[in-house]
Structure formats: structure tokens, C-alpha cells
Length: 76
Image 1 (cartoon, one colour):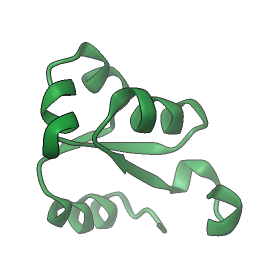
Image 2 (tube, rainbow, N blue to C red):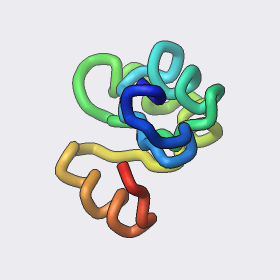
Image 3 (tube, rainbow, N blue to C red):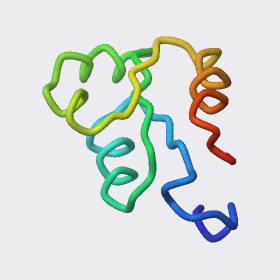
Image 4 (cartoon, one colour):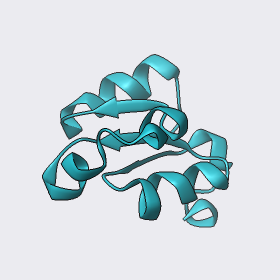
């Protein structure tokens, strides 16, 4: 994904509803992360301490992304 985007990992915001399969791996390789509190996994993982430790943002709706990306001046 990083190669396809043509930008460094730190310019990419990865959105996911699972800490173990989404947020943690993306953070590990240097991406910014948004934890999505939606759907079954989003609610199952929402109270885990890793959510606060590994996600740059915690959102409840994908409509929040433009504000996050725009506010941070992220290219992607």
C-alpha cells in the first residue's frame, strides 16, 4: 500500500476497527492511525488500552476523516 500510494508511511492515515489486524500493524510500520468505533470489532476493541496507545485518532464515523486529514495537512 505504501508503494502504491507513492508517499512515506507517515503521510498515510490507516483506518481500522481492529487493534490487532489493523491499527497495530499500520502503526508498527509508521502510518498514522484512526481507530473506527463502528461495527462488531469496533465495539469489542473500544475499551482496550491499546486503542489509546496505538491510534492517533478515535472516530465513530468515516465522515470524520476529511476533518482529520485536512487539519493535519496530510497529503493522503
